[in-house]
Length: 283
Ligand SMILES: C[S@@+](CC[C@H](N)C(=O)[O-])C[C@H]1O[C@@H](n2cnc3c(N)ncnc32)[C@H](O)[C@@H]1O
Image 1 (cartoon, rainbow, N blue to C red):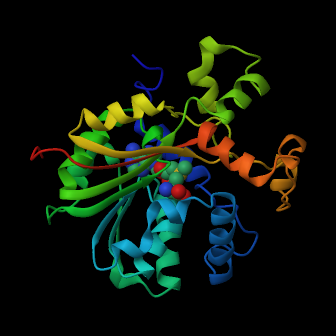
Image 2 (image 1 turned 180 degrees about the horizontal axis):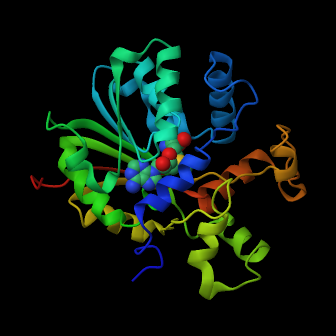
């Protein structure tokens, strides 16, 4: 049994309500256009692989289900290109900010929100058909029973539709950094250490991490056919500067030429990105 299986879902919701993901990406007043523009600029500056992974333009006129929309940065970009978006998140606080964002940009006709648990998606969403894309970025490793969530996702994906999901990579620079920096090498306590230090706010109640193999297996055992697996994203900035909105790289990344840093990210990045489609006719 994993250390996270017994965590109540309310504890997860409480954590993300206390500090919605990326909520401090701007110092402007939360809910203003300037605030949302700055949040987006910082997010895609620090995580530049996201637009390439989401491939927003491809989903114009398509049905997109986003699981774990947070404060709605990617949600907004799916809606902007003309996708028909259904966005789900466990955190009511996050949904409130995401909803405001959609209003600010006048995209209300394109997005509907549901506040609830991805592990119970079948009871949360109306029975109104399947989706062309299911997108979930940095979410399903935070739920106590990821298998429950993936089993439900499969039912909501159209035959031939696409699943694009990011979960954390265990064989990553970030995990080594946590282990050596915070964990004093306590490998036996790694799962708990990762969860404690995985996010901007310490003490995340649930954070699983996967290898390329276990990530692929997680999808395959729920009827997905994995078509692409890659890792990306190493955070290169000094945290004391980063929280002050200054972007100063750690000395050991400063000297690295960009092509070398990119190769390092593609080998030991924190984001394990998986693309899958439906396998057979199982639903
Ligand atoms: C790291 S944030 C990512 C948010 C967004 N995808 C982004 O990239 O900014 C994780 C999000 O997952 C949501 N979450 C965690 N467990 C969930 C669950 N079981 N069902 C739905 N959402 C969940 C949290 O509320 C939080 O908003």
